[in-house]
Image (cartoon, rainbow, N blue to C red; front, side, top):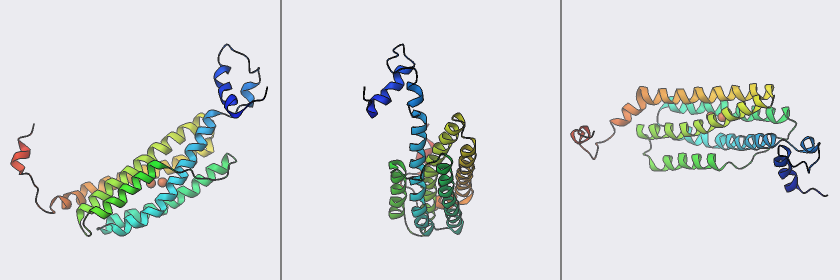
Length: 207
Ligand code: FE
Ligand code: FE
């Protein structure tokens, strides 16, 4: 019986079942579904990191404070290394580095660009908003790398797991740094820009 791509995928389901129609060596012939998913996720984050390399200079240029400008500049250099590290992971599993359109990162970066368009140039509010946009990006990366590290460990890809974890740590550090910048002064100074449409007294009565 000729096996189509679809049938070979379905075979995985019957291996564990009572139906032995695929023969005893059906399992060996089938590419791991988890490996396929891992590779897919790798392509997703590879594409996402490359998009971020393009967007970070725009965010850097739009920043009001030198501190945020530097933070974006430093993370740009890190992000370029993240791309290189991913290429190492592809090599470790004998695959050619290849990106796959990541809708999530495209959306997050679109949001960052909208923020630049909708906030006042030179304002602290712009930086407060840019930090939140950047943290949304970091959180997406943290979730992606966190998952990839765990899958790599599960599949026994220890070298790949180590490389991915290095990047995961840098994403987490960046996220913390952004929180610190926001909380120590950017949000506070942004709070002083203009007057509110509500009165403070009104707000205090809300339980
Ligand atoms: Fe990254
Ligand atoms: Fe990042």
